[in-house]
Image 1 (tube, rainbow, N blue to C red):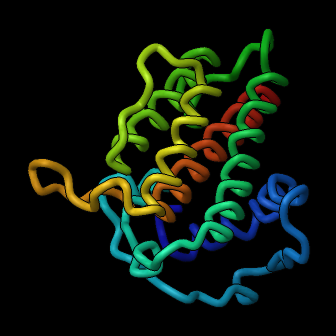
Image 2 (cartoon, rainbow, N blue to C red; image 1 turned 90 degrees about the vertical axis):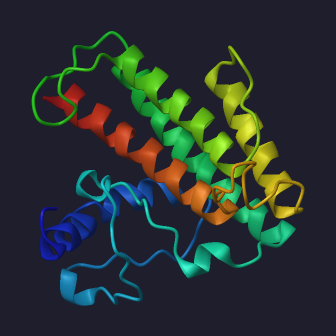
Amino acid sequence: GKTEQAALEAFVEYGPRYATVVERVSTGLTLPKAVGDLEIGLRLKGGPGTEFGVPSAIADFDLAPVTARQLERLVELLRAAWAAFSRAAYMASGKPLSTGPRGGGRALDKIRDHVREADEAYIAGLGARAPRGADWQQVQDAFVDALGAKVRGELPDRGPRGGERWPARYAIRRSAWHALDHAWEIDDRAKS
């Protein structure tokens, strides 16, 4: 949304879509029926990608240590988002995708490549190396391996030139958001 109110309205509207993604791995999700039902726990200053919905700010809670058990749970949710993307792409195979404001005119194979390449970049954001010439499943496996290495302290918090590396929680949130954003783009464009 172009405003906070519009973004919150879209979030409420997308509630059932989120529920469908996490229903296999999470119980007890209560969906808000209206913006007034939301409790805003944190506001962050956005970056250049915020206008497109990108969760580009690392919050203090992203920096909290992650236990092995927490990582297992977070990876379960991430895999649910990846599965939603894979399902959407599979269901849209062979169907024309509408063009226009929701995704422009990018073809399905280009969207798949884009999501895989983004996850390769997210692996680098964690401080690990993505496998070269890998398919998306291999990239996902490498991503999960990098998350484990990050949580165990095997990957540095700063790069060789001093740049900040991503914490595990943020990398998971960013990848899950990206997979769902494009899953729902495919769903919307395949229906039109």
